[in-house]
Image 1: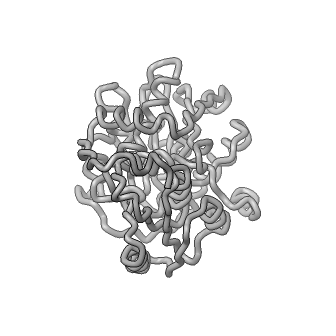
Image 2 (image 1 turned 45 degrees about the horizontal axis):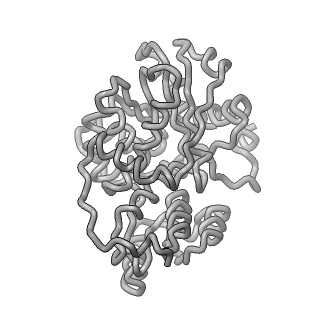
Length: 335
């Protein structure tokens, strides 16, 4: 284990869920993460009825290919030497698995990941390449939890949740802090995708007191967050049927009330809208974006967003760019 993993045995205090805590998280992880670039496209901006200038925060270019590295890095930075001694563990089918594996590797900490046996091969390969130990399970929540409990009992590893945890939420919110600094003009609004809700909740916290309106983007085939907001209560389960595999998770217990309180609206988009947005981003921005990463742009293009009449620049968080390039791209399959 590297020296930085064992130099401090003190238990760091739990940070409150506030913008100040997001700022503290950013200070802690800045040396570890990429300050990802912000892209613009005059053609993508001009194509909108509202003529909003769009600023794309490219978290697909983050370490591990997704924003998840922020939360994983912050979570590890908040653990004590004793908590790191036996390694860390998690369950994930995709980006969190790779992010935690890479963050653990960089700190010299062992990592154990439970992955569904139907996980995409490139994501399995990435987790292995980062040195993590993988245990496969059936592709359902009870199997994930039971297998993770077995791994924890056998290894003594500390669980690092993928989205429903204070340190994860605060780490994810740092993407907006950077976007606000990088954009050459004040943003009127920002849109982030929502699955488990760590990124959207963190974004909402980071926007506190800035005047930036916060919106979520969710697949219509996995719209538990949008439906829960309408009903006034969190939905515990989601029957997800969407191409956006990173957004198939029900919104977290900690994240939902933050979203309820601080997010103006969660906009749902169809898979067809996500695929169309993804294709435009590939063609115009010249970057690799996964379906989940295109959801926020798809939401901005939708009548639901345009009918709000927002004037001014809009930030869009591209959540990731990890997909299986050995398979036809979704717009190729649909043609």
